[in-house]
Image (cartoon, rainbow over all chains, first blue to last red; front, side, top):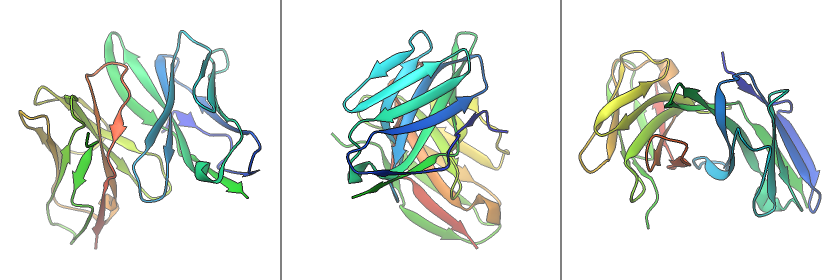
Length: 115
Length: 113
């Protein structure tokens, strides 16, 4: 089965509020994590990534937190806007002893932003 | 700079037929990965091509095969189509096999009837 899953399948927030999307992973060997945004009818769009030697990384309006102890990943979106409405996927990449593994995606969380 | 492009955008096939999907990677990228995304699910890794060879493969039957050309473009072939093969097929490219961001194309929507 899938090793990456999300705690909440849907999330509804008010415009201007902060959003937090959570993700659990089960592979201790994963050393690279990515958040993708997918709008209807489009392919996944890269948001932010983080390597396992970090616990926090910030981008423009987004922050990813990695807690390796509990195998938890989160995406924080500040001042959420209607254009942020989409399905968000976390993905992990296993490190097979030096050779890089493929991306393993979770099922996704649908974020709806109310104006 | 064109990103990842895929063709066709939509395709309808009959059960038992064969299909070929095409992908052109982002400029400067030499690694192409293919994913299958069923409705309401996350993408599932099919295989990855680098230097014209299949380097990694996910849990997909041999009916799924691929090819990479010298210009780094790639094809995904599916034989003996099943109804369950209906999905969005995504191509992603990256500048190598390591921890690089994978850029995704818009996908090809395959419907098998």
